[in-house]
Length: 86
Image 1 (cartoon, rainbow, N blue to C red):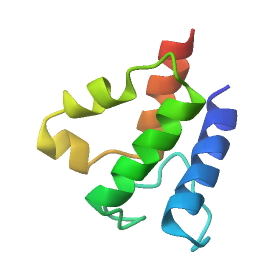
Image 2: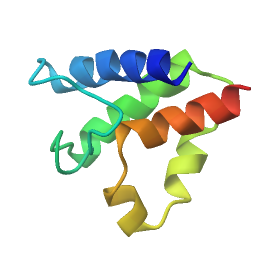
Image 3: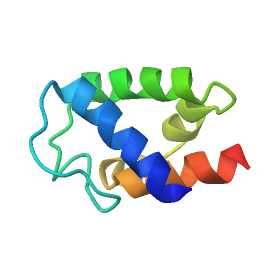
């Protein structure tokens, strides 16, 4: 299940960024590997909420301390989605 979610997230990230720079994996860091800007993260959050409307992704992400948010990886988001989708 996690691999499927990571693959879906990779597609969403590619849509947000506008082009496929390299392979996006669970270990890809939004800050370091993907160089995500805050506006891009907002756009991704909207796509996640549309796809998994039963989740409170925005609540989950905004509850994180800044250092934890900056260290976020694609796999962390996938873990949240899998755990919350139950």
